[in-house]
Length: 274
Ligand code: FPP
Image (cartoon, rainbow, N blue to C red; front, side, top):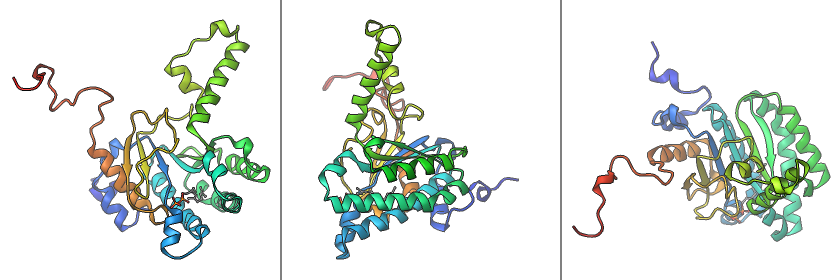
């Protein structure tokens, strides 16, 4: 006979198991997007250089990715490096982040394979340093045969650039397929030209360190996502925090612009006092 215990996926620790037991496994988000924020503040609080915060951020990435895969989330997307980061941070920090990413990719491939995770990327990859691009390509190929969770790293990513690229791509494909006069654009067409065309839109977006912004992340795709902001700084974030975010998500009622079935009976329409 199946017991509650049997339903907890293997590999979760005690705290994760406790939170997981409160979840409805049939209503897990299909795609979770995370804005990882607070590495600098984490380091500052400890009187350490910003680099130490980023390094600690890798541990948080590892824990979050493994937990998401263990509970069978189909897609996880991490905002690792925005186009703005590239332009607005000192070159020393940017090159540190590039080295950290390269090292992460090399070290993590065995763990990704062990967890059946396929690695992918969104963003203007061609603008990244060549050695980083080569490492990215290698890690992508080394995990391409996996059939479990898709882990997408947003690197040199900007949602506005993604939309610009999508519109350019629509125009290009129209001009190669009978000419611009045949160009028809609707929501489906736009979605099919985004970097995320192979992914469902995120159901849940998590932002760490308490900031209430989307920071140019997946603006089109997050149209109906539930937003979960936690004060936890990214380097302190672990799988258990992800599960807490999912628990919060499951308490929300998603309406997609429609009515709340329990309380908004159409015949109860009133304007002011009646
Ligand atoms: C935000 O903290 C974090 C980043 C800009 C970089 C994210 C990088 C990592 C988590 C580590 C490496 C990632 C991978 C995928 C290996 P912040 O520096 O903006 O923090 P602050 O707002 O407190 O200054």
